[in-house]
Picture (tube, rainbow, N blue to C red):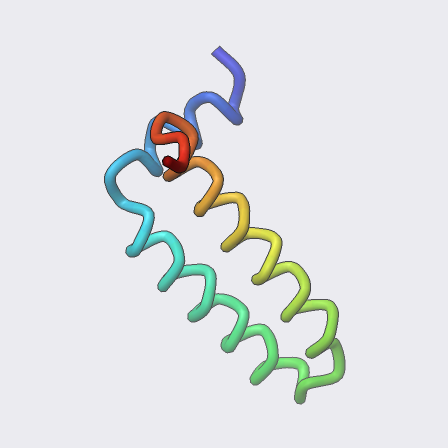
Length: 63
C-alpha cells in the first residue's frame, strides 16, 4: 500500500478537520516567515484543499 493510499484512508470522514489543519499550518508558516512566502503558502493551501475536496467527492459523482 502506498503512502498516498494510506493518506486517503486517513482522510476519509475527516475532511473538514484536515482542511482546518491545512489552514492553521499555512497561517503558522506565514507568521514564522513574516509573510515572505505568502503567495507560495496560499497556493499550497489551495492545492491541498482542492485535493481534499476531490477525495471527498470521489465516490459521489455530481448529479
